[in-house]
Length: 319
Image 1 (cartoon, one colour):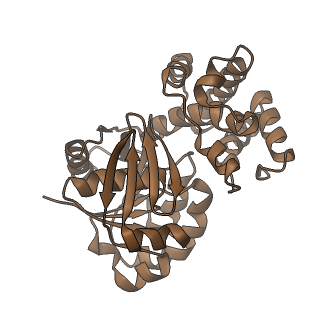
Image 2 (cartoon, helix red, strand yellow):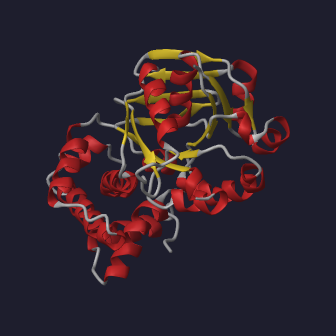
Image 3 (cartoon, one colour):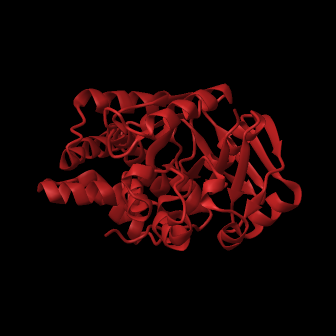
């Protein structure tokens, strides 16, 4: 049985998953803005996945038009695939609309602070946490997206799964549908652990790549930068204790090995810097620094790289 899905944010991540899901026969509606939205409405969304081209003609709206055209419960699931910098303003913009329905909301975003913002609007019982793993993607032009990597999804009931959680049947249905659509998907009963493991990678490579202009392979295999990447990852592991997630040395080494052997990709933060867009620095490095301060420990690698990025004129000031 096909799903009816709203994907808020048709960028590299949201656009790729939209193409996969629509190609498998699911009803997908997108939101976007500006020239990207106009292009999708006019000629469709073109997704280049490592040389394989998906041409999709999908309904697409800005948020004001979405509110007029649709009801939240027209959908089985709302997927938020925005930059984390946009989560709070979009939840404010769509808050009344979302509260008028009961549809669950899945976050597929960087960082560990998006789900709490969504929960303020719709309540914890409607929130699914998620992460896109081993995927790189970005908008290459109006109506055009490039993506690469295995492009897995891990999802689960947020903040934790109860023994008889009402979200389990939907998660099982999503897992089956996404896998059949060519999206390797697993469901976890500890989504906060998985989100923090992803943050280990994001904090390790995103700020440093934006500062140096280097891709992930160049950073992790560089004799000096590789040590900085590992140090920033270690600080993220330490920060996880502030939320009782308690990542281990094994988690640190596994995440460093994963990013070291992954495709040589431009991080999303480097792409944003090159395009003059706001960076997710506060959502990634800032999240680590805030937890370290809470624990009374230092995060010298993260603090130094973040300060250099901010004072280079490209980073957002950290909270």
